[in-house]
View 1 (cartoon, rainbow, N blue to C red):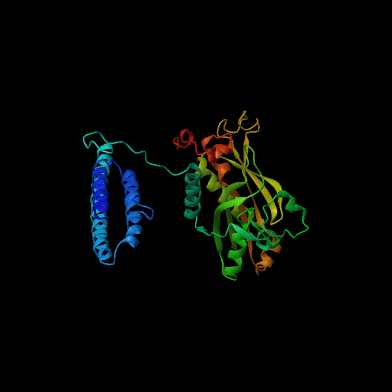
View 2 (cartoon, rainbow, N blue to C red; view 1 turned 120 degrees about the horizontal axis):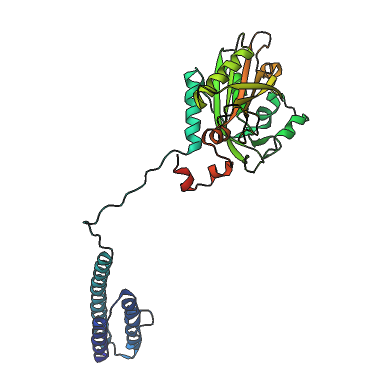
Length: 340
């Protein structure tokens, strides 16, 4: 058995010299030192030895095992170093090559327009208020004079999570929550920018879009104040030559209500294809805050009045940059975005 162990050791050492990678090394280890390896097979024959020979052969077997483990470990370290050197050689970097230019990003055109809208209203004394995109039915509809059986709900095809929770269809809930929080403090002068959600999807509508709604509550607020505020906004956003007109409309949360148009920037108001030969382009909805909305937020409509308006940021961007399809704003096509 002594000769058998020595022959096994010499065979393993000779085979080890031929090993070229870690996978072959593992196979060699299993062959000689595994549970069913050759060393194990030799040790199983120790039962046939005399009591005097067993400790001698056992000690020799341990020595052979330790020698093989040390040789395998050393070979493994050499193979790992060689593999690392090959990897470094393959990934070698030529530091003399010219650098690669990285294109710097720019702010998305929608947010460029949103930033500009916010700056304009800040300069008019408005502060920014924000709220959750997941809202209660009460704040999204009922507190805005749109009870559950009101036909005006059909104007907004909403995304409901439960019967009482939905994705907000406008940022008007921020106005209501602000009025409740600040009551009876005056004045309230805010804009509420943010994402809103409705089930619309075509060239001019998106199921997710951005709004900026404005609210002013104080004593003796008139429709003239609303018109002056919106005219100032239009001239600063589109240019001093732009004109506005207000057309009677209907919104449940304002009374009276009006749609606002701006004069066409292509033809100057004379009529062209861009404005369907009317000279005007629809831009936003507005009106004086409905007395019931004031009452539900704790204000006395006999003592205070206010106005509100809602601006679609995508609509402003399309008019400002002459974009005819809303969907390009969400396609993430660099050929389009790099123009801004």
